[in-house]
Length: 283
Image (cartoon, rainbow, N blue to C red; front, top):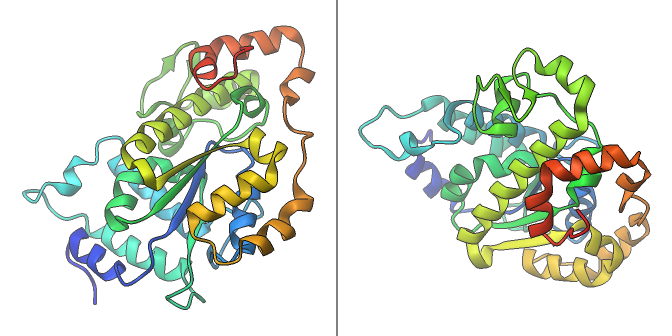
């Protein structure tokens, strides 16, 4: 049956086990976490790309961000019309994502931008658990991503559409050129927004939030992997660790140090408050 409200939709989805959701700023190494969960017996979706991002959920996140982020209050206002398109999208997305799932196996997904749709996701799945992977923003800054030209990406970077210029960076049409000229600073802005939002949400999610540092995951893989898999309720933790252990590498940690000193200083200056608050003290 097609749900008429988000509350009815949540009641329908309650038949499923609560999902485990992995989110992060892109290029933070979350493919490793998704592989770990999948090999440990957590169903991570029927359609995934090479980065292990779930493709069906991306459609839902994009719609939510474009129409309801950062102020989703209209969704909970009973005096306003129901967003029927959103309801239909939720039903279709999770039907596609769970194709092949037996209804009992632990499940979840990895999608970097899920953090921007957490008000909706946590309403639909009130028992969901969240794994937030954080990596040194200076390493992330030197991994190119997507320029904030489209409305979705503008909101991902700065929470709004039509900003024009902010902190020396252009948004919207001019961002295509700006990103080619100064991608690392755009990426640092993206990192700051994503990580800050994820940690604010995590503070409210309390025991249903697990924060993982990429550096620790690589350096003490077995201990960190065991902690994540216990949090996620993965049924085969030893198998997951054994299967993924060989994919762990320390090579990407501190890669920003290979950049010219002036580029390192420029990027660190842009994100200094958040970098230092997270313990990346040499920023």
